[in-house]
Amino acid sequence: MHDIKWIREEPAGLIDALARRGNHSDEAKAAAEALVAKLLDLDTRRRETLTKLETLLARRNAASKEIGQAKAKKDEATASALMAEVAKLKEDVPALEQEAKRIEKALEDELAAIPNAPLAEVPQGADEHDNVEKSRFGAPRTYSFTPKQHFEVGEGLGQMDFETAAKLSGARFVVNKGPLARLERALGQFFLDVHTGEHGYMEVNPPLLVRDDAMFGTAQLPKFREDQFQTKKGATIDDVSLVMQNAIKQFAANATFERSRDGRLVDTPDVRAAALQFMRNAVDEWMGGASVLADRDPNEPIEHDIPFWLIPTAEVPLTNLVRESILSEEELPLRLTACTPCFRAEAGAAGRDTRGMIRQHQFTKVELVSITTPEKSAEEHERMLACAEAVLKKLDLAYRVVTLCTGDMGFASQKTYDIEVWLPGQNAYREISSCSVCGDFQARRMNARYRPAEGKGPRYVHTLNGSGVAVGRALVAVLETYQQENGSVAVPDALLPYMGGLKTIEKLK
Image (cartoon, rainbow, N blue to C red; front, side, top):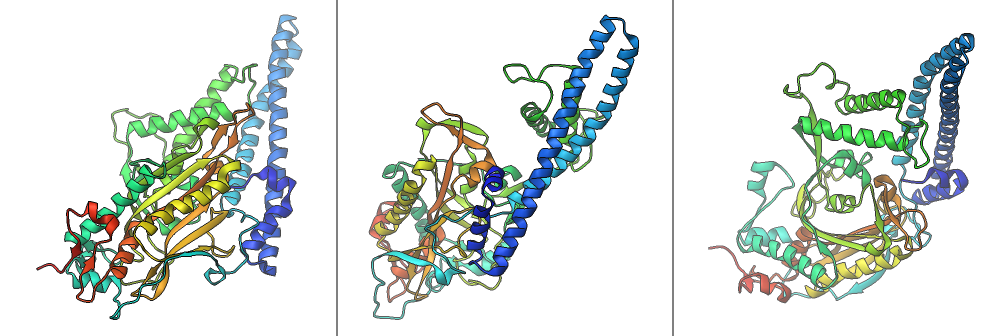
């Protein structure tokens, strides 16, 4: 998410960033200018409303004190007039608070839908055809026979079954079995061992189900909702209690009542009443308008479903490990890795890669995530790319690295390298890893910060993520690269320690 202060001070910066993503077309520039004008209008109205609200609250607090002073002087006329003024202010404040909340929500919704700004060195372009090759490793192998595609190899071995998977789950699923299933598992273990043992990443076993806030934090929501899988569970009183606790924290952080010198809210009946109402509103909003706090037996079941999202990548839980926290600079960089199942609806991929394992609803991937300082993020990006390349080099798979152009890079990315592995059966390079630096874009959505060593105030961290690498696609590359004329597949040397002495995968008898 972008900083509204930056947009206010340098509106041309966001206009140029959005125009670059649109390949500097006249339409893209006009749309960016209109959007920035809308953002600035909302920001102005928000600040004006907050100023009015602060003025009313200050006058209400002052008038409340004056009532006591008037009563001490037995000036009942003045006291009555002040009490009438306070009563009127108490009526006006809630309406103004609602207006401020409405404008704030509108501004946040607009900001949440804006993609990250490309770095200056990102090549200009409209789509994947304008990506720029950075480097290559190895050369495509030559074969004395026509190499098959991975699904032909896997089905020929009798160990890759799409038909049965379709009976179980529908299209874009697969059942791998026997030595082929072991080979797939070996790839994930191998990647984790290299990244933890040689590259300094900490292995994490994260949840596969996450809440809205986690998906929003890494920018899968709201824009890519249709590409995700969602599930639900019934609410419990513990869930309601957690919502209430979070609401009180939010109220304490943002309420505009009088505060003491240490920044704490002054405990008054008005503050308590407002806090209770804020908590009730938070629970009602979470429940979709159905109150659970009023006139309810605590033992009565709560008829409410809580949405969960199946993770599209371990980037989501790994990056969100630092949400709503302030790290010390000494803790950075944090380097995290996980091998997890991943789930994607592939809503925008109709008709693409309908056969095989290239584009699945469920797949396994080893993810790399780095949390670092702004000064080190560019260096960390190059390091992450090298780590992802290392596992492919150890497997002796030919690949190339491309820098994505402005029109092809992801929503949350400032700059992205794609690693494309050579697939002999397709006679083409196909993506097997994306390594992206996101700057503070995700950190702002997660409120993830660090305290610099020199003692300055907290700053937003920079986040990076990359595939290290996609296990399913690595299996595809191994099957196609190491296939033999008789239909068997040689096991790469790097994977032999994981295969229990098996050197060749042959057809099941």
